[in-house]
Length: 200
Image (cartoon, rainbow, N blue to C red; front, side, top):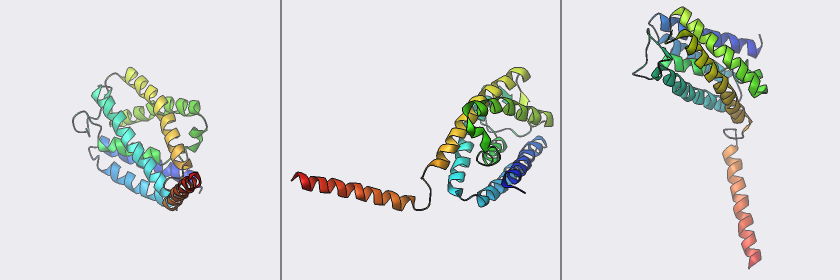
């Protein structure tokens, strides 16, 4: 079984655990499942520090966006609500769960911004519609709520894909980064000192 297939299967396990158990009033099960999915993902990749940073950014981005939707009355989580106008933990866990796919089974969305935008505009509302069907989420107005979610994901997915690609391509968090950076700074300092010596 290929890495992409395993990644896709684990993603679906995490998604179902979050949505189904949230609908059943046992919202704690989903985040626990996602912790296991994320751990399995990080153990399967070489640049696990970069992947961990990607998951963390997804959590922050997801918390902000989902909380905005709750605050605006676009949707609500009747069976497992968050605190006040903030998104519940299980929906944030879903963002982390989704982020495990961005460099593996969903890496193809990083090929172009419009591809990611179209996929986000379609996939986002479909996922929420499925969640509503299971009873995990309710919409203020079904039509406009899905339109807003689709528009949001049409922007958020390309942005997140760009963030993930930037993290993966950077030398930050790579083995020996600090040592290489320190050596580079020492070389620059030495060049400056040598330059001053020549000026004298």
